[in-house]
Amino acid sequence: MTNSIDNTSKKTKPAFSTPELVYIAVFAALMTVCSWISIPAPAPLAPFTLQTFAVFVTLLMLGGRRGFFAILVFILLGAIGAPVFAGFSGGFGVLLGTTGGYIIGFLFSAVVYILFEHFLGSKAWVKLAALVLGLLVCYAFGTAWFMIVYTRTTAPVGIGSALGWCVLPYLVPDAAKLVLAWSISLAVGKRVRL
Image 1 (tube, one colour):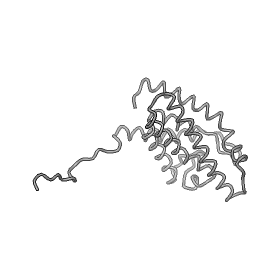
Image 2: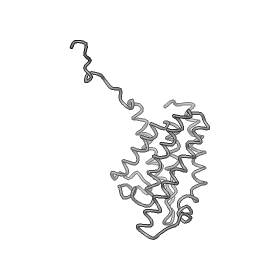
Image 3: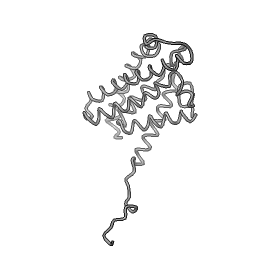
Image 4: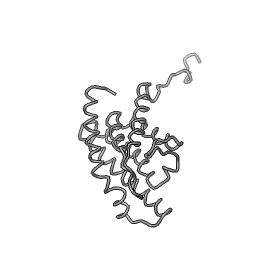
């Protein structure tokens, strides 16, 4: 038939433009640098890093979809052994360790942000609520992960101890990181359109 359309000749639009791919790579690199800036903490606590700050900035600057992929690139780099995590560590073993759930939980934070953007728009209060709820989801997933891994490798641990080790010491620092990320994204957003 002369009127038939050859579907193989249709060009499909790429998922991301070249500039978007660059933004994703740059923000994955930002997360790496921020994870290297850390203050060690006694076991079983995770080190205090700027990873959460970088996740906040990434989502605020790139939005949920591109931010999700920047976080995914960061995690995948670490999973294959690149030293992108705290203490210049990397490898699948880090993700399977007691604090790996918090790193993977960053993806859930991005999913929350995507859902808020999709259903509620991009008003300031929506972004702030998405970041706060996303952080709580990250805490919940990471703490559950911690309890499972710690119980298997060390000893049974209760929810109270897990929260005392893994969440409570980080609440104030993470709130400060959120305020700082918000301020920086507002300042940069006025000058740069991503």
